[in-house]
Length: 425
Ligand SMILES: NC(=O)c1ccc[n+]([C@@H]2O[C@H](COP(=O)([O-])OP(=O)(O)OC[C@H]3O[C@@H](n4cnc5c(N)ncnc54)[C@H](O)[C@@H]3O)[C@@H](O)[C@H]2O)c1
Image (cartoon, rainbow, N blue to C red; front, side, top):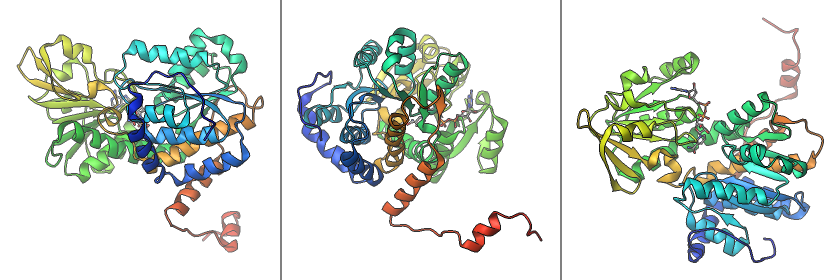
């Protein structure tokens, strides 16, 4: 822990700190890989003298990432990467128990969210951990003078990487950026098993519905979509997949799911989950044909996958039924369409995000990416980079070890065989 100091912050309620501390320590038990990194960082101090801004979902797992970065010597500031994902008790504990300046309030307005992004930039970071690329985009658009002190950035999610690649193509990404999401020990596990479980957790916590026997439509069969479809089937839902990519669509077919266009699925589904990273994938014409009582939610990064402006315009009224459950009465047919979590990441709005065990690997990648940037300061070319494969393998090995599992190693005969071309039939 860094020496305590008075810090500035913008959080909901400092008195929530004791509850947050208990939950942070509970998550830490499930994060053995990150703990090992924190211990090494504590003795080696690879981030000494670094000013670091982390824009992330303010959860118990993120708190443990920030602890590791602090142990490494980084002077860290944390802001929320989504207005609805902050756990206010965690924010309070980070301020009170670890002296981290936190700017995050669950339910903050878009205006406050953007103000926090600018406050973070005023910190003049050397390294930015971003989730969705809002901080990086704002730096490029409004504060380009900060590039001088910037060593590089890391990006947590698929949508953020898509934006970074667009920046690279436009020639404005003039610093290195580590695509943490693209590490295998990140997206194979976090996006698939983390989003798979926590999205259903969010839907269930918000509504308490039974999934068995319901028709659940997954829009987008990428890493997140695969996990949601798999877990929803396991709970007895009839799963339909919609896609725009023929390869992903055929994969869904072979995995045993019904595949059809959203225009067709719209009138069949009981529950819809979007995970495309794309805009308005459920639009006015789809809402217009939904069954009475159909539920829609989003687990993709931004809250634009559902066209909620269109839904509002086509509805006579809207009412809040429970927290994170809002019902719209469609004028044309009198059907009720229920929106969960305001169309924002349902797993973080209505549940707690991914379980710590899976974030252990994602955040091990984050911590090691930050260290990689700092150790290679001035040597990396501008643009999107991924961590070397050995780091991925090392994280997987540590996780297996922590789970008490061993695997085989190649024999020298096998190494020789795999390296030769002469032996065939
Ligand atoms: N909820 C979470 O905690 C969480 C975790 C990880 C990633 N994400 C976010 O979830 C989104 C998806 O991530 P991913 O890793 O699965 O990405 P991905 O690229 O693997 O998958 C996205 C899929 O959506 C499909 N798609 C695009 N437009 C579509 C449309 N109009 N209709 C149907 N399908 C469409 C693409 O073909 C692709 O297969 C991103 O926004 C990512 O940032 C959220």
